[in-house]
Image 1 (cartoon, rainbow, N blue to C red):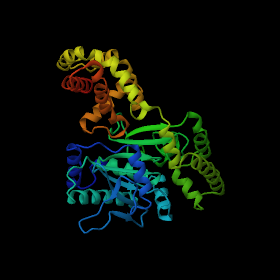
Image 2 (cartoon, rainbow, N blue to C red):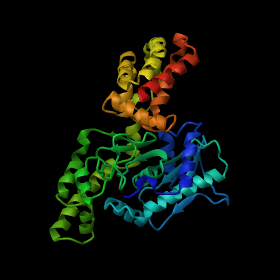
Image 3 (cartoon, rainbow, N blue to C red):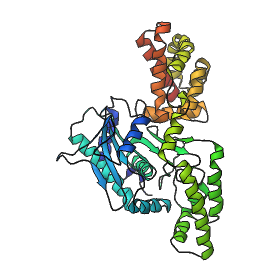
Length: 411
């Protein structure tokens, strides 16, 4: 897709960036995004903590298009805008699902999803909600796929559940730190991408389709047995060919092959795709995965704060020396517990990979949106949690945190 990240209104893009830069309030958490997804089915009566955005004429910011996009714009308790896309409930949405599966980047629903986001941002700005933290997008299933597409196009933060990869998108080495994608390992719709378990099949569409943002996979590798069976059943067929065979095209053998594949697909979908399963799996994660428990904060702070005086003295030198490697080594030495937690928190392969995510965070200063971007907030909370134990002045603790973050990211 030519000019993927440049598509759209410059004015709206600049406005979104301004909202992010001027951020003052916390980003929504998992529970808020889940509440928005539940509310999109009845936006006039959103769940507690959310209100439906209206435009200057008093019209509710909702949409339901013939292209398969149903969405609503909510405001949370911190004046964050959360544009929420609905999953598949209609024939039009099913048709959009099929266009996405076929790798059709020109599907009208994709453009309509971006257009609605821009309309919501403009309405929020016109409403004078100057305390905005930022504009966010979210959704489950088809809704998650649309939210991911919009985020990749506009830079919006947010969270997607059970989404496919984004048509025309290649993730590269550093994911967007302000967006999180949750995937069940056994969910065939969520694994539909060129960076996940169904990559060998999806790649036959001839277009990149990586998932957007920080990707967190739930469940165990054993859950992927159904996905492996789907990939095997696909043989050499592309998703577009499979869809064509299901519609009566191709040979009789291909039609039978496609039907057998869809039987496996539907079985896995029923087991692993529902939002309730995602909510349960996320809630069951260890505390350090989503946020530190108070006890963990206190324990880590007890050992970490003893290194603060030396940290404050040595990090300016590291900054002057420009040594990222030295900063990482020192961090792992003086904060071993936190270093391990950083790797787990960001689901990175190593401390260096976690630091890369922190670099993306600093370049787009959001307090803690998404799993990767929570790192700065966690570090700050770690320091603050130990103040009463070590009587370290708040100013000193904050300075140490700032130096640590700067050294790790910039060397």
